[in-house]
Length: 92
Image (cartoon, rainbow, N blue to C red):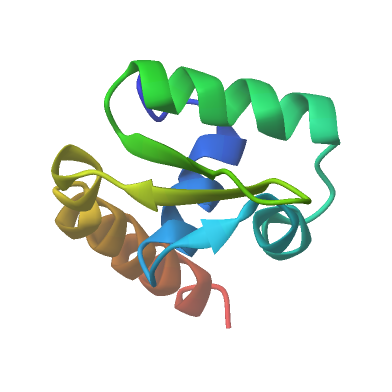
């Protein structure tokens, strides 16, 4: 249930490469609304997968990064990727 939503997997994929700001995530994840992305990030923060850092600047800057727990999902996501590539290749 922690990563069952399609958006969460895409968010994890994009945060595996490093810290991102909200706008960067919105562009890289794809056709997701701001409301849905915000809800997914909040849920992932509550689950301990994502850290949210707010900088006291004008305009405010918010960055998202994976926690150690979030980083521990990398082997699982890599295995899912490998399986998907093999599946896709079976139809070529």
